[in-house]
Amino acid sequence: MKNNFFEKYASVLVNYSTKVKENDLVLIKLESHLAEPLAKEIYRAVIKNGAHPIVRCSVDGLNEIFLKNANDNQLSYVDPISKLEFETVNAIISIGAPLNVKALSNLDSSKMAKRSSATRELSQTMLKRAEKGELNWVIADFPTQALAQEAKMSLDEYFEFVEKACYLDLDDPVSKWLEIGKEQKRIAEILNGTKKLHIVGNKTDIVFNVENRKWISCDGLNNFPDGEIFTSPVEDDINGTIYFDFPAIYRGNSANKIQLKIENGKVIEADAEMGKDFLISMLDMDEGSRFIGEIAIGTNERVQNVTGNILFDEKIGGSIHMALGASYPETGGKNVSGLHWDIIKNMKENSFIYADEKLIYKDGKFVI
Image (cartoon, rainbow, N blue to C red; front, side):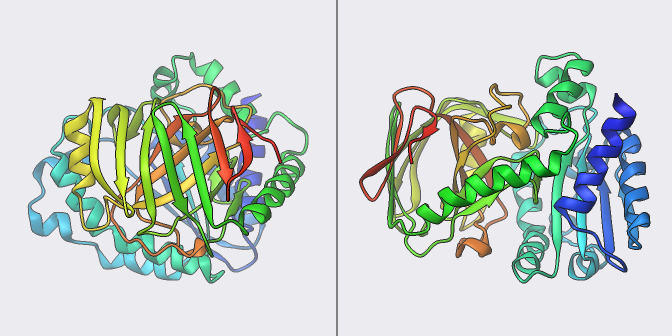
C-alpha cells in the first residue's frame, strides 16, 4: 500500500497542487530525512515533467540549536539565498515530517516571535507572487511516529488516516478534489456578495465585516489535505467575543480553551485555561499580531477529530477557524504580521452562521 501511496501522493502534489510544467524551477523543502520515500517520488515526478528540482532537507535539532543560541542580530537575519529562492522559483512543495512535535515547546517564545517577524518578508513574497500567478505552492505532511503519537494512533493507523483525508484511497483523487472544489466555489460565490458574517455558538457572538473581500475555496492547491472556504475580514471592523474549544498549537506550544474579545478588529482581551502566557506572547509579537488575518469554515468530512496537527485539524468538517495575524493578499486582506496562527472552534452543536442576517450554516452544515 505505502509504495503506491507515495507515488499517488507525489503525483497529486506535482501535477494537481502545483501544476509543475516544463522548465519550472521547483523548490522541494523537507522538514527531515523521514520524508525521503515521498521526496523521491516528488523528485521523480518533477523530473518527468521536464522541470528543475531543488531539494532542501533540514536536519533534526537545528531549529532548537538556533533559537537557543542565536542573538538578536542572528534572529533578525534572513539569508540572501532564501530570499532569492522565494523570488525566483515557480513552485514550492513543503513536506512536514517531524521527529518530535514538542521540540520547540520549552524555548523562549520571544525569540520565536522575533524569528517569525524576521521571516515574514519571505511569506509575503510567496503570497504576493502566488497572487500574481508567478508561483504555486503547497504544504503537505509525511506520516511520522511523532504525528501518529500526537493523534493517538499507531503509525499504520495514521497512514490510513492521511490517505483517507487526502482521498488518496480513491483511484482518481484529483477528480474528487475537483468535485469538492465545484461545490465549495458555489458557496464561496454566495459569500462573495456578503457584507457581514455573524457567528453564534458556545460563548461566541461575533460579527465580521467581509464586504468586498474575496472568499476562496480550498481544494488541495495550497494545503494537502484541504477542505475549507476562507477570507480575510476587514481589518478594523470585527466585533464580539469568540471561544475556541479545540487545543490551539503553534510551533510545538499550545493554548487550550481560548476566549477572545475583539473590538474594531483588535484583540483587547485574551484568556486561556492553559497556555495563557504563550498566547499573550504571540499576540504581542508585532503590530499586526492582535488583528485577524483569516476567518474560515472547515469542510473535510473525513477529518472529524483533533489530531494535534493544524494542517488537518483546521479542515475538520463542522468547524471554523480564525487566524491571528497575517492576512492573505488574494482575498483583499491588508494585515501584515510575522504571526499566522489558526485557532479552531467546534461548530457541530448549537452553532449558527448568518450572512447578512440570513442563516447559511447550522450545527456544522451549510443550509444553502
